[in-house]
Image (cartoon, rainbow, N blue to C red; front, side):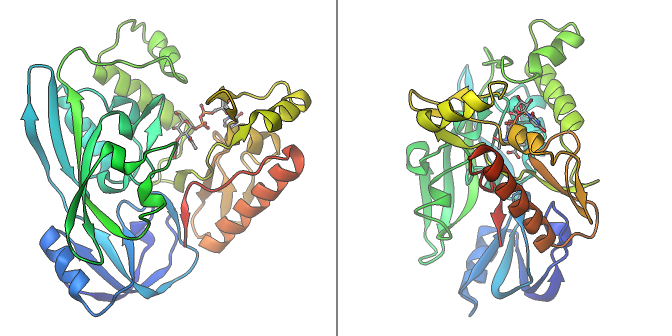
Length: 337
Ligand code: EPU
């Protein structure tokens, strides 16, 4: 454990933004994490996979901690289910593939989501009709103020759409160190009705897919729509899909009857932000090295040397334009610093 100075964070954030951390340290175990919390620097900035953040300036006033604790362990099994604990620093997609290779089902729809296991619960990652919470049992986390370990059950995490207690009441108070999942060993709950999965499988003439085939279909779809952060800096969906009241929706849909939408409850409707941004004319647009992806308007991209501020300016231009055109406010999904 060694504090380094003036470290470029370019390779630690999938947007590839080149800001510097005045103080940077890597935590490879809970033991080293506790040591780090003992240092005389008391304000922290945590980085896991760096896949859900936009860095707009150097981090001078906080100790940047790269949480890199790894390991995957089977902790329990019965005839039908298996309980697996993965440490926070495991790459999410590698973990999903590890499970699929061993025939453990549940995470296949979330293949290829960038980021690490430890940050996945913070925003309850999800894709193609499945969310992390569907297979989540608990997570352990270190309380920064006391250095005590606490286990959070699913209920305690208060998961919602791209949301959890770690983004709200407990923001900045805990460091998630591991997550435990309950997966199926047989009778997998194959879920292919959402999005383009069914069509992708039909192309391959697969009618009753196994978990590997679902995963492969998801990987194909994601690769066709979403840029690979190793090739083009991005942070997945930059905005959340707005959830509006029935009243707002009724006014909106009268003006834009062709808009796609999903019913969330009797009083709430979700409208795809990607559609709003696309219709506002931003899809594929480029402003210097900051841009909107050509296949998915919800994804902002860094063509190479965009600054975080340039990406943020573009995000705000999009937000304002969408609001002026549709009367609907979209808000960022990524954490902005
Ligand atoms: N759409 C457009 N133009 C676009 C993009 C989308 O018209 O440029 C329309 C589509 O035609 C479709 C609708 O918007 O009718 C929804 O699009 P899509 O199915 O691609 O899903 P999304 O709502 O844009 C969400 C998640 C993604 C996840 C996909 C698939 C959010 C914020 N995003 O996107 O998650 O992969 O569903 O389940 O909920 C992420 O969080 O980083 C992410 C990529």
